[in-house]
Each structure stands twice: as C-alpha cells, then as structure tokens.
Length: 288
Image 1 (cartoon, one colour):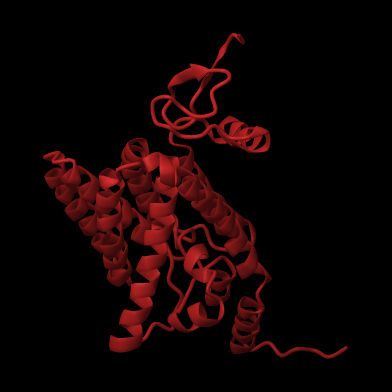
Image 2: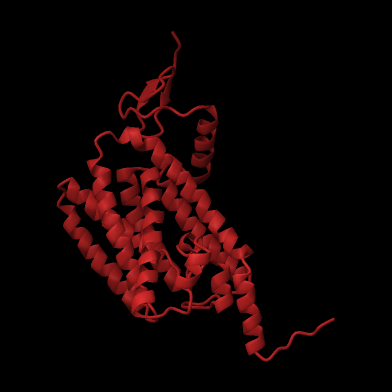
C-alpha cells in the first residue's frame, strides 16, 4: 500500500496518492502533462485568484506596451486612432472582418483613469466571484461577458447610431462579474445579492463621471450575459462533470486573450490608419 497524499487542485481536499478522482468534489486528477502545466501556472500566478491576477496583469501590461510604443501617458485618452487599433480596439465594422478584436478590446484601456477604474472593479469583484465558482468558470464568465458586451454594443450602434472610433475596456466583463455575483447569490438565496445592486450603481456612477464617450451598451451586454451564467453555476447538479469543459474553455480564453492582441498588432488595419494620420499632418511619402 503506497503512502502519501495529494491535494485536489479544485477543492483542496486531501486524497490518497493512488486516487484517480477527488473523494469530495469527484473531479478527476490531471495526467502528468496537465499536472505539470497546472503546477507551472500556479507557480506563476499563485493559487489565490489566479485568473483575476492574469486578466489584471494582461490589461496593465498591454497599457504599458502601448506607452512604450508611443501612446501618451495620460489620465484620459492618449491614443491616436492608429494606436487604438494597434493595441486591440474594435468597431462594429472591424468586428466582422477581424472577430478576434472582440477579445483584444477587453484589455485595451484609454488612459490611466479608465485602466484604474476597471482594474479596481475587476479585483474587488473578481476575487469574490472566482472564489465562489472557481478559476475556470470565472475565466469563462469574464471573457464571455466581455465579448457579449461588445457584440451588443455593435448591434446597438449599427441600429441607432455610428461608432467610427474604436471602443475597448474591461468594463463589459466587470459588469458581467457583478451580474454573475448577483445571479449566483440569488440562486443560493443569499440576501447579499441585493447589496450587489448598490455596487452596480456605484460603478455605473463612476464610469459616468469619467466623461467622454461611455459605452453603456457594452455594460448592459455584459450584465445581461453574466446574470444567467452566475445563476447556472450555482444550480449545477454535478459540477465535476463539466469541470474539464470549463478548464478547457479557461485555457482557450487565456491563450486566446494573448493571441488576440498579437493578431491586432500583426493586422494591416492600424498601419493603414497610421498612414492616413501622417498624410493628414501634411507629410507626403518620398519615393526612393
């Protein structure tokens, strides 16, 4: 009989070293390669709220790369049209030809205030929801609701107005996280779901005070997508059965988030816009 024990990566329960699945949550233990990947991820991001840390780090890192590439370090704005497109912004028309921008747009922020407010909300709310539903489901909810926000935004502006400038920011996902908490707590009959509406009102007011063009359609889209997901995550009867699915989705969304930013940088869209900006400034190309 072998000695020792191993910790379930999902619920933290101790199990026999020979166990193939967790005795508490019934999650199957990963194979050698998958276990190595998970251990590497935990070593890099920490065991506590790793996906919240990842998304915050990606957003801050992306803004830093933008500043290093020439974006003005400013409270609000600082991006030219070409710079916004280079680092992930989306428009309704671009979403149809470069759909990865629906993901990259979640992580681009136009100014220190925009970045700070979204990261404050993501940390404040994300750490609560990630602990409740787990990292895999949290990553799925955050990215999915961020995408849903930009999809609704595109439909709204295509129908009722026009958006020629790019849009971006994690606020659709942040509103999705608030909604996810409301849906989860409501399903659990936890009265704290009512207090989350106060948080919702506070964040709505904070974004309104930022001035400029606030994409309320994206906020609404994130909220509408997040509430039923939070409700569903609590009502799952056998969550262990879907754990591998959500773990796979989490990896897809994490890798896809980075890939989407790389694709926007590789796209000729921002280079064409940059050439137009130079031409408007009165510079003419010199043929050699």
